[in-house]
Image 1 (cartoon, rainbow, N blue to C red):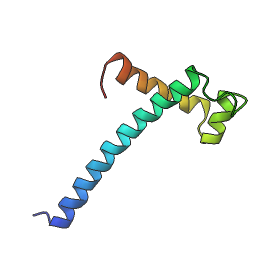
Image 2: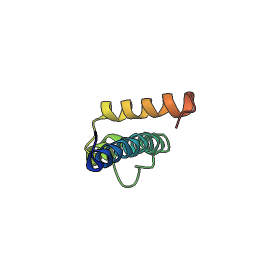
Image 3: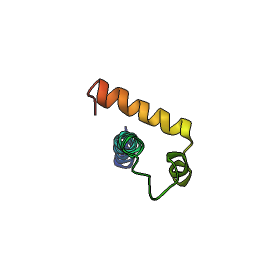
Length: 78
């Protein structure tokens, strides 16, 4: 039998997962918008320089944007 502490811990873990999934997709949306609209201009010399500030490699940013694009834009899942 699970204790209330175990049940609460599991519930909080599931909530954390939901939060992370949402934040991940929002990050993809924001990175895409910053890149596509060149919102980095004026503050940074390039999108790559902005990514350095974010401590995200160009490859990682591309993957995050691709996941956002596939799930949210193409398949309308959010």
